[in-house]
Length: 188
Image (tube, rainbow, N blue to C red; front, side):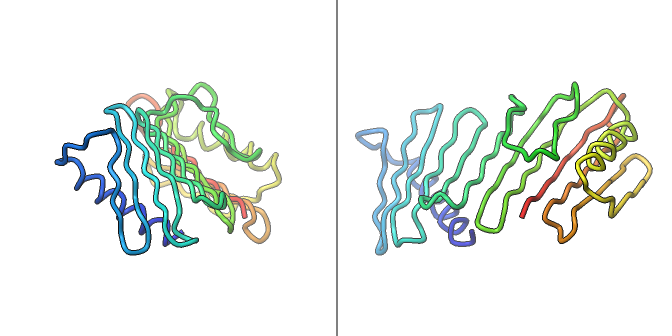
């Protein structure tokens, strides 16, 4: 994952460097000693493809607030949706979106060591109601409570299975007349 993040940073720098260029097509290719990076953009979408040594190949793309990065071996993926949108994200059975909430952002990652994700949302319900919902849901899914903190306007709850094969953390804080929530999960 570290090499993928390094390549990502290099690719983003290359994208910025290419901004001042006047290419003859929508593609800009930067050749390096150990491979190349191709950047395609049309003002609405972008994609970056890096080809190099066996462990460094990946594709990154973005479209209207949705960003995806995938390793060419298919073992690592990161998906970010900064516009909320659909709650049809890939979550394990023990994680659900809060009923009636407006999802704001989602981040999902998968790799050789497991899968994880985070989503944020807003609801007109209180933080206590949000936490109570996730406590009941996690208990029904066989997760045991390991932390329950109430810090005034912010409440946090964490549950897991033995060996931390499944972990769920929910943070809910007061937001105007309701709550802003963040759900984070991990599956090994």
